[in-house]
Length: 455
Image 1 (spheres, rainbow, N blue to C red):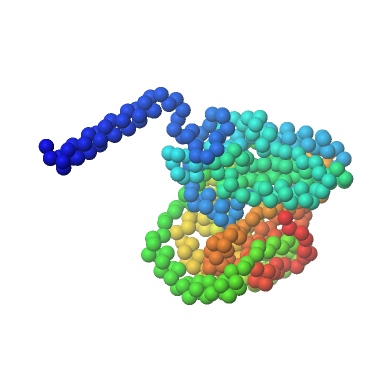
Image 2 (image 1 turned 180 degrees about the vertical axis):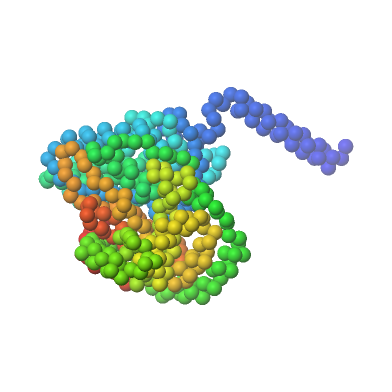
């Protein structure tokens, strides 16, 4: 037998031997490994409790990491019965977790599936409570608030780590009667509506209830969704090439230096009432009889920007998505110059506007070309937090809406994103706005009112 024949024979034997060994190992694992394969998680371990796995939509997780990571509320109270308030709040957090164990879930990546996954425990444990609630006592309440807010602003760092996706922190001052309550919800598992429903359960004025938490998916998966073809998308955005090139050159001209600028303002209630009264006096018979505060704010913004993108809650507007559905159920509507109070109200109330994204390309391309403002309105979700032993003073919300990394900044600038504006209620009868932009000179809040601090 020649040398080449010997080599060929040895190679064949090696292949057969490798196949037999690997097959045997696989059979042994299948027979004796009692844990399901899904428990084999990359990185850190999950809570040692039975549960289920929910594979997340990659688009949703990407949006949460790049645009909105956390929904964080800050409520300032005042009272002398600190221990009573702390005990009440801790007990309420425990009750909320028992009713909604998905809040005690963890983000992970399975070895059997590279897609981001949410582990949902069947029951919330005492360990979950200890990680979802904390009470900080400090001499400097302002600095402590800043530290807590800073620690709650990262979604990506929660993957494959035993870190809570929902957390409540109570901060009390030794020197004064001030109390701060910070609640953070990871946007991967809930939007503003979900966050405020949970926030309301912390109050003694409301009962703890179970929210309907199903498979996480984008809202258009529930609707008549038609994925635009690559050719259609290319033809829609190809004319933007010169505009995008110009923005990139401006980015280089400024030395690639941009900084997140946050501004907060309490909008004048007298001005809002005046605008509503003027609409009622001048509207035609074809115009809606009612316009909301949001309609007025969006219309006013269109005087400062050629396009405004509005987040709209589709709960109770779409089949299968009701008021107590937890998760991310919002869609976007695009408004441009010429849209008035009436036309904005008609489009928001018209259920045909929520039939999916297949028709949005005609609006997305002009918005990207001319520049747009991204808005979300949380005023209708407001609840006054009533806790024994303290009284409500002020409420604000923080939604970090811009990715300030190098590539995130480039993406936002090239897309034509001028600012993100979040409307909310600091108290029952007031309306405030927080604006996030990458350059202060690019955008100023146009509404009459008084400036205040932002988170």
